[in-house]
Length: 418
Ligand code: SF4
Ligand code: ZN
Image (cartoon, protein in one colour):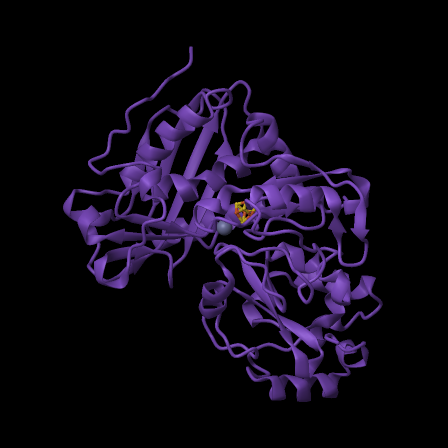
C-alpha cells in the first residue's frame, strides 16, 4: 500500500512560486545557521523502525525564539521503503533546499553541514513552526519519490548538544559518500551527468558532474547523479555522453558542450572542467568554496563558505559568491566543492594543486588528511605546511613572503596567466 499525500498541512502558502523569494534583513525574524551550526541528514531506516508522518521538534521552536537571533538546527530525515537504498540518501537530502524554499516567507540556503534557514516576520505571524519543515518534507518525499519512499519520519533538533551530535554523524556520512568516487577517474567512464537543480536561482547554470569533478555544492557526486537518474529518468540529472575530447588538459568535451549549450538555452557555449583561468565551469550560489587567482603569488587561493574573514584576493566569500554565483563562467574564479580540492583533476589544467597557496585554516584542517595524502602523491610530502592561511596573512604580499620562505612550488611554475 502506497501512502499518497496531496495536501500539505501548513498554515503558509507553499509552492515553486516562492522558491526564489528572499528573506531580507528587515523582514527577518530569526534564523538557523549563519553563525550557528545548521545540518541536514537523510538516512535510510528499516520499515519497522520509523513511523510515517511523525514530525518531532526536540528543543526550542519558533515561538521560543527571540527576534533577531540565530539558533542551531539539525534536520534529520529517516526514510524507509522496500525499494529504498542508501545510495538514494544524498538525492533526497539535496531536495531539502528547494522544498523548504517553497514555503512562503522561509528561505533556505546551502546544504549538508552549511545549511541556513531564514524565517521572515510574516511567516511567524502566520504561525510558522519548525514542525512545518518536517510536514513539507514528509509530504513532498511521498509525492516526488513515490517509488522509493514508503515511510518518512522527520526530527528537528535545536539544542546545541543534539545538533553537534547529529553533525558529527552527518560528517561521517558525507565522508563515506564522497569516498565512493575516490577510486574512479574521468577517463574510466564515457558518461558524465548534468545537474540543473540550481537553475531556479541561476538560470544559465549547468553543473556537469564527472567522477573527478563533484558538484560544486558538494552534495552531488557522479554516483549520486547516477542514482538520481535511475530514480527519476526525466529529472535534473541526465546522462551526458562526453563524446570527442576537445582539450584533454583543460578538460573539454564536445558532448558536454552540446548539452550545456542546450541546457543553458544558448547562454553557455562551452566550459572546461579542469581550469579556473580559462573558461571555467559555471558557478551558482551554493558552492561550498570559491577559488580565485592570486597573480603575484603565481597561484590560487580558495575560500569556503563558512569562513567569514578577509582573503588575499581582496574579497570575502559572500562578495565572491555575489559576483559570480549567478550562473556565469568567470575566468580567474571558480566555485567548487570542498572535496574537489583533493581530487586529482582539481584545476589540473592550470597546474593542479601545486598552485594552491592560501586557504582558511578551518578549511585546511577539515581536509587535512587528504591534503597530506595529495602532497605525498605529488612528491612534496610537506605541501600541507606550505599552504598559507589567515594566520600568515590576508594580503597577497604577506602570502608571497611566506611562499618564498617555505619554497612553495607555485613560485617555480610557469606563469599562471599569459
Ligand atoms: Fe546540482 Fe550543481 Fe546545484 Fe549541486 S550545485 S545541486 S550539483 S546544480
Ligand atoms: Zn546552486
